[in-house]
Amino acid sequence: MNTSTDWFASWFDTDFYHILYKNRDDKEAQLFMTNLVSFLELKKGAKILDLACGKGRHSVFLNSLGFDVVGADLSQNSIAFAKQYENETLEFVQHDMRVTFETKFDAIFNLFTSFGYFVDDSEDINVLKNIKNGLKDRNSFAVIDFVNINKAIKNLIVKETIHRDTITFNITRKVENGFIIKNIEVISDDESYTYFERVKCLDFEKIKAYLETVGLKLRAVFGDYNLQEYNEENSNRLLLILSR
Image 1: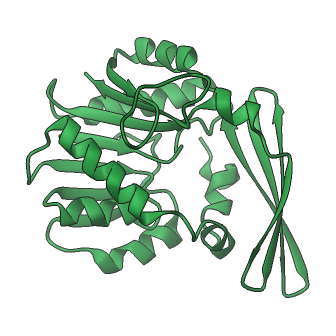
Image 2: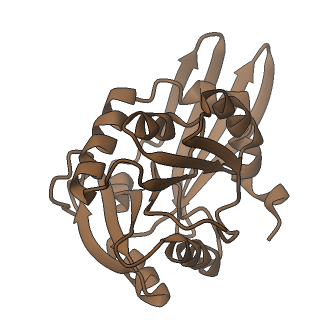
């Protein structure tokens, strides 16, 4: 494992990444968290890991609901930013999800398609092993929030340009070698920079095969943040509720 050569290790640590995605819907995220902890019947004080937490928007809201939260992310810059929100029951740590967790949790959330980055299936499976091992007991839950890959491919936007302040993002997308690949050209102050994102085309059946391999049990599946039924053609998300 060499994180220095992983695409996400560089792109997620840039200011450009956060500028591009700065308009994410916090209200939608908070509604999702409220629905989720209600469905899981998590009691106040429960210990939650927000795995791949970014700048901590989910972590901060979960903590405000009365949970003991650890936000973990590979991005040093994101964790440095999130640490301003720390308190006695909210901590942020830099962590690679391929590395075992020392602490056990009542719930582990992996949100906003923060899975399926790796070329080798064994690395994705290793992440799931770590999630399983990080659960406190059989009454603990893991949640994986993945894009519904079927709909994403069917509705792929091949080319678009996004303007954020004085920065231009020229984005192209393609499906190649089992991945959706997003190429991002950033133009800022007359300089051009190139990055990319890559997410594995994991459909429900493939993810279920991963879960079987590591012995994680599928408890429920939903298709959106309102926890509506999953439909492989029309749902925006593939939300998996898992346990040991």
